[in-house]
Image 1 (tube, one colour):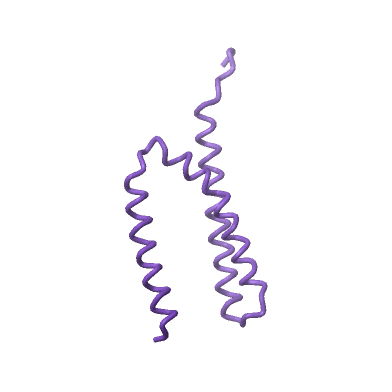
Image 2 (cartoon, rainbow, N blue to C red):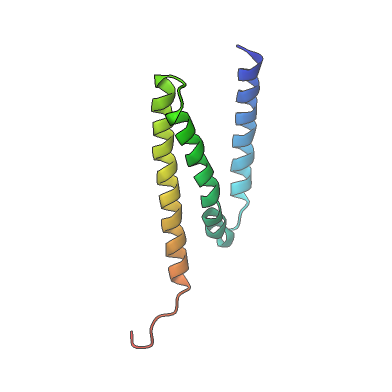
Length: 97
């Protein structure tokens, strides 16, 4: 294996453990606002996936890029749905209802 692949695997593994530990320590009251704020970051993922899917990198990258676009869009739409649901909890009900 080349040195770049090994370095990539090490960085991915460390990022996975770090992300898991950080998410474990977030209190439930802050989890939803932080997730709604991360929707902008998920939009960057869509841009990257579109570049890979639309680039001339070969047929495998087109399929992987298409899968990444689909999964990133599911993530963004779900994030906005959760944010909308969270914001509905803070709306005042009309007086007549």
